[in-house]
Image (cartoon, rainbow, N blue to C red; front, side, top):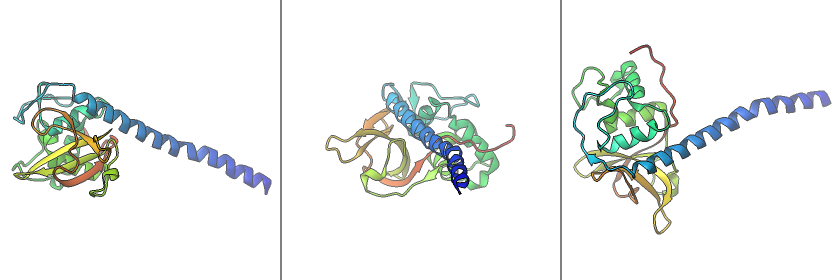
Length: 207
């Protein structure tokens, strides 16, 4: 019996650390994502959603312009996660699962990742889908939130580890037209999605 108990304890020591490490890695990644998002607020960026032909992978529009999705893309890139490539590969694999709002018959690596509905689909397929609530502390640092702005304009931002002046809501880093800002905006618009994404890549063949 003693040997069996010792064997069980030894097996537990071997088996449990990877789970703890995985949780620690996720926490660390989300903390780094928050830092990267807050850092985006130090950049002067004019709001501009024009179509550009960009490199693939690792392409970006000019650094002094951008929209809400570019805050997300650039924040993840600071962690070595390229949403341009990830979204493109996933759309190649499963194009019919993505919105058809733009009349395209195939993926376009220049623009697909810069569209909120496409990011929502990607995070739904490869991230964690979290409840949409109006309880502030259901939204944790590193979470991604999507909204519908007046005029049916989709929007996205990142929850960070700062809180509103009254201490009741986490702040958001987003670009709603004035460049990347740190704002008390969580409940300013209709929430359409709540996600957590830690950078897993879809499996695909060569481009």
